[in-house]
Image 1 (tube, rainbow, N blue to C red):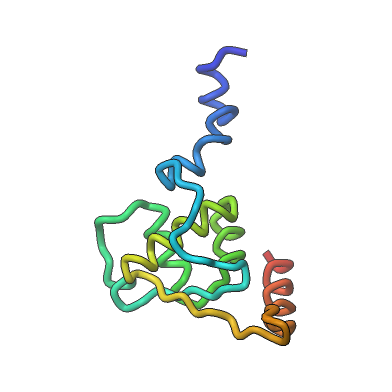
Image 2 (image 1 turned 180 degrees about the vertical axis):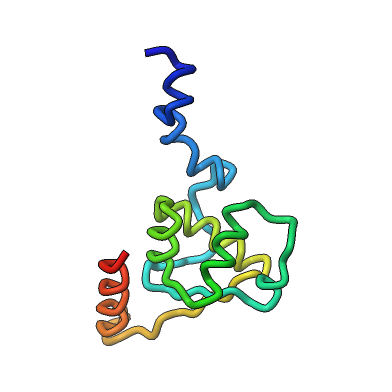
Length: 123
């Protein structure tokens, strides 16, 4: 196999591409568990330029609240990449992060986890 062909077919490029979107960063600036809900702010809805296509698509998707896991699944991104992008958007005030209520022992709320699981199974 020739490398040019592999890149054109998405072979090796498929492994690199997601982290290219985060400029190679693998750690978000915020703690974003999979059940965390995010929604686009008024500033994010008004954004017309100055962001990447991925950021714009996430802002459109999050006009209705989405969990971090849903954003990753719907945008077909690795969870780590989705967390970095969402963290960047939150740092710039384009999305709001809604921390989930914790249950006993600082564990995620069971009802919320069931809703997220149900939503992901519908994808």
